[in-house]
Length: 77
Image 1: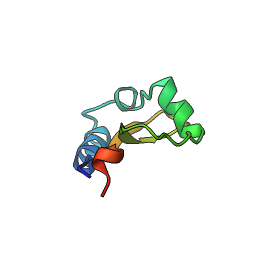
Image 2: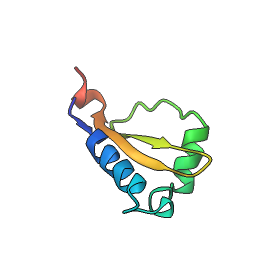
Image 3: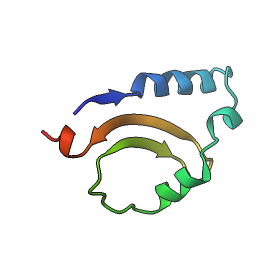
Image 4: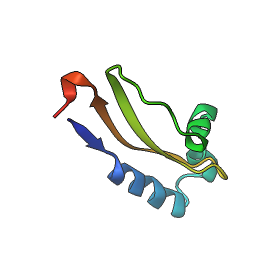
């Protein structure tokens, strides 16, 4: 499995938010579907797919891509 971790990007975004270089409106803009997914548990999928791990605050709409990876038969093991 190939994994891309976006932790450093998240830290930089939070640093820029705290430092006033980004506004809360710029970083708290989660798409309604991300909010829905954050509130509800999805179903298992047997198809091969790209997976995205996203942190979402359902109160202020903060969202951040944490990880992405491929999942499925070709990527097992």
